Amino acid sequence: MKLITAVIKPFKLDDVREALADIGVQGITVTEVKGFGRQKGHTELYRGAEYVVDFLPKIKLEIAVGADMVDSTVEAIAKSAATGKIGDGKIFISALAEVIRIRTGETGEEAI
Image 1: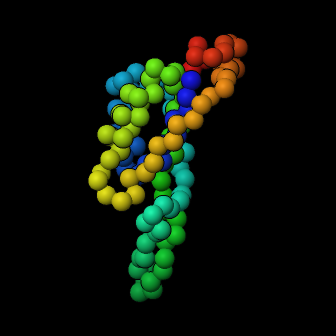
Image 2: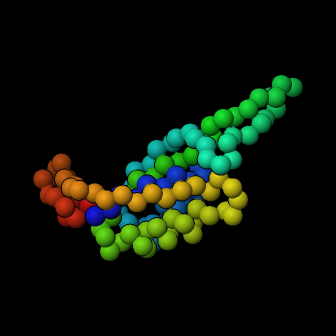
């Protein structure tokens, strides 16, 4: 079992959600986050004053999948979130030691 964490641009959320639904991903956790990578924010003009926006709004997705779904899930996210411009985001894959469904007590891949 793996936990796939993706940080994407906010306007790509619907595209990614549809792509994940198409391949059969059943659960996803979405969090609004702020951060920066190589672009290191940008400068904006507000009421004649220039200021630096250090942290850009992003969406963080967390998806728990079985080992057999990792490649297709990563591919779906990468294709649907890509714009070809800086700041498209990142995908992180980490191992899940255990998953437990609270309602039924199921464990492992059955709990996903």
